[in-house]
Image (cartoon, rainbow over all chains, first blue to last red; front, side):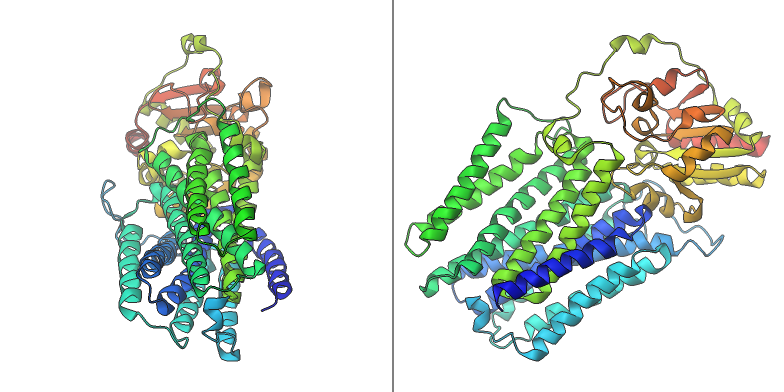
Length: 110
Length: 471
């Protein structure tokens, strides 16, 4: 792909990003940060290509660590965002039985 | 480019899949503009990610399935466990950690790509090489910087700014050194020594990431995380240019935009410029008058507080991070329920930087089933304050400090605050008179309208709730 095409995509994506993200209310900024954070884990694709094609041990080692890092970023990021947003979604249902665990429990039983 | 060229990923079907993937990212974020649709939006974005990964795995020539499986499964297990166990109060450091591994992945991939291009033995075109260097340097800074931010928020590293003389000079020298080394690499990257120089750049970038974040106070870590989030996004976009991958370019750029917007929003909420946050070492400032601790305060108990609240018409609750640390959000919600039963109008005033990240307090209150309609943003609640009978400050401090308005010499002068001092009465629930995260004394505590209830936030809220019930 010619560099100029890639820069064009970059600039347009930056404008789309600013437009879309400016509309997200402050209430949702923490989930937004965590969700966009998950999205940059897409760099994992680069790791898949490196490991998928290389036969040299060092490239494979670097690439496998990169895949693991990227996967943590993606899986963890989306799941934690889902947990946070689940709390907002539950809101309209009034007076459901409290299912919150005790306050010092480690997981919140989502 | 060379790696990818062998894969023929430019076929229309592969490109189409990538376009679908990034469209789903944009659509997913777009659904994130309302609390009721945001969860679905997140799933849509995640679906885009699955498509992108599946497409890449289906590219011809991809092998080494064992290693790929180890990376994917290992990473997934860590990600699932970490995201299930993390407490909502610890969300900022969790985001920092995820951002760090993302940045680390970018830097490692750039390194591997560089090694691979060298091994082929032909000259690397500059439009591949420059993005590789960019992703490696920025990804590495992001990895190390995020880890320091995590350490500070988690309390593993002292939150105070860590200063050594001439730190900014050292950072500047490092940065100039990295740029110079990159230029040398760009001119002559085909000879043997360039591998060593490349690794030297990687190490220098790691050092820069550490030294960049260490001098910044713990209170400013969310801004740093947001900025590093933007950095990781941009480095991923650069990696996309190097690898000719359109999904990477678009996704990385979106994250870059998001991180930039959030960084600026936080800086505005604190009335400070981004350079001031990054380079001023805030928190190291002397805390003004030590004599202030001598000033008299009015102290009350839970019963008096309950009476004040129960006979009010309108109550505004101002929660802060202290409330979250005490895990008091459920008790506070209980207290609010009791008040609402008596017909008292209850609202929550959320400062843009309440909690440790923008919107963090909203998440914590949502966890306690507080309807998001009751959460009022600062600009909406401040005009209501003069008509409010009682403002209850729970675990918040700096964001209510009237010194931000009245005292031009205060370190937080000009920071927008929740104007609780405008309410008829103020109850502050706090363990002690100790200063907040910014390390400055709060004039509100000594105000004639203010009653201090010295207690743990959770205990106080449930005591008050019980007292109101018994009235």
